[in-house]
Structure formats: C-alpha cells, structure tokens
Image (cartoon, rainbow, N blue to C red):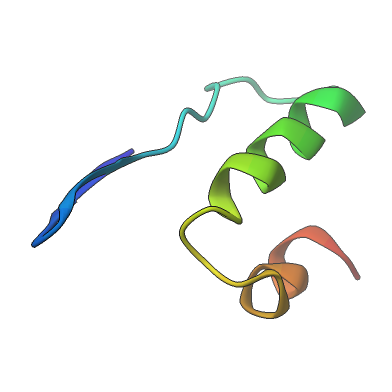
Length: 47
C-alpha cells in the first residue's frame, strides 16, 4: 500500500496470503506504526 502526502510517500508492504506468520504480523505492525499511532492500530491487531 502506498499513499502520497505533502511530505512524500508512505509505503507499507502487506503480503497477500490467507495466513500470516506471527513474525510477519509483527513486521506489518512495526511498519504501520511509523505512520499511524499504535493506539489506532491496536483494534486491528489485538482482540
């Protein structure tokens, strides 16, 4: 995924697999947290 903002590009790599390993989920969360606060992301990663 990529979005363009005034200060540049924000890129997030997300594999297109039916199942993701725990480490892959952690890597996605780590990448996403560069652009979105962890409090906003938590609802999508934790139950």
